[in-house]
Amino acid sequence: GAGDADGTAAAGGAAAVGGAGLGAGAATDPSTVLLTSAAGRALTVRELCYPPYDLYTERRKIAQALLRLELVEQAKATFNGEFDNLVAAKHKEIEKIREKDVRVDEICGELGQPSLAYRPTFSEAEEPERQLEVADSEIEAKRWESGEERAKREAAEKAAAERAAGGDGDD
Image 1 (cartoon, rainbow, N blue to C red):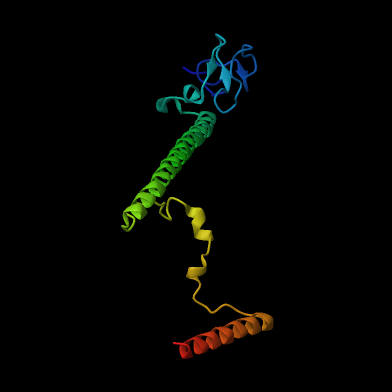
Image 2 (image 1 turned 135 degrees about the vertical axis):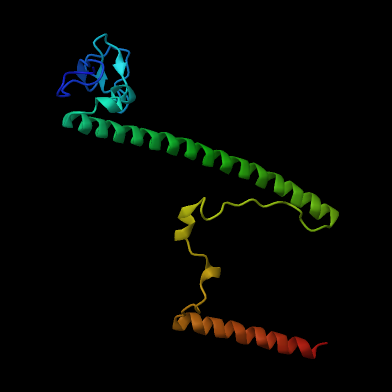
């Protein structure tokens, strides 16, 4: 089988751990290459896994569990990389659509018609970081004003009311 009965050697009669003994041009990334075979060929994590019927010692079961965890981590990393690429591609496509929407808006303005442009957006599920942003329109409470701000606002309202009252008499 793969190694001796107590499971001290890995599947395929591995000779070196951690990429040691690899040729000069071989990959030494520990997440993909853990051991080299007797023939000097690098073994991947998947090749190091035991068949289910060879898991009769405690050491092999532990080794298998650790190897399977590494396979899960590799699958997650691969998925996340592909997902990030798809999100980046979607951002590019939406940006292209927005550029075309600007031209559609210009044409509609020249024709004197309302804009017919489609405005694509991301949903909150696609951009979870938006959950942490708060827009002013979401705040329902009245904004707190300092004494200075209140005085400026009241003066501006009074001036606007005087202009409106003075404008009504000129008609």
